[in-house]
Image (cartoon, rainbow over all chains, first blue to last red; front, top):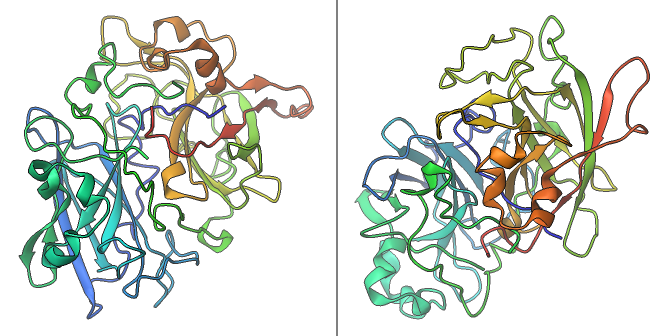
Length: 178
Length: 221
């Protein structure tokens, strides 16, 4: 019954991204973190026509239930962000670090759409400082040791993280298929 | 298998972008965050977002159409308040995107992007113009059938769906590797809208109906 997926194609750039998309919270907020990275293909080349969406709990581990993902409302927190990649395959988000939910270590859900992806890839971004919690995270426990690092962002500075997505080949990011 | 596989070599861009490793299927399934979805409100949408023919000073060229349908979950229940986003080429088959180099005219009165929220019955409705077919560089003499891109949010982030709606009887279906990437004909047919005289408005616009059924996740095969 399900409607099949089709690629987002190369021409979504004037329709889906919006100015406030990457700013889940404004970068000037004291608790803001920045997440930056690149999307790379199987040849290690940047993917300049990908779209990333993130979705997450707030700093207390509460799942947002209010609108505000498109038009950001003051101090509200919608938990949703969207960013198209630039010519170098780069993307960025300004958000807060989520609190833990359920039995999982803190993570941000990440969806990637692109020309050449007939359906999106779904992954999680975990944080490097939560090593202890990662040891008991149910999902990470199912990922082969050698690939686990692809789900953990690198620390790039004070409140700054780096998270590259490799669609294919060496260091391929772990993608989830619920 | 409803969804296309990631690797579909007839569509060249999949070759270096399709994941090569098996997806990880967590025993516990999605977490509580992944089973929830962002919420969007009417105050976030513009007044003209549902009518792609009134976004500029003049009227766009082309055949005016109404495209409507319902967003449903796997059990046939309406998904209310779902954000539906569309984008498309103009009547000449040209996108309002800098990267589109097809030598067909741009239409200053047509951007080709819209948004709406589904109503209490899960229904969306757009007024637009019928998009043209256009060539693309995938292979010699490659042409995309006319289509409207759709992006839909469900009640879980894992239901997120981006797809394309096609028009009935398009002679390009058989030659299009993106449409044909869906293995089974019965599934491909789910992407083809239905001409509907009851949706058609006299002296105004042709009507097409197309329902969208969200699965648990488009990631599963």
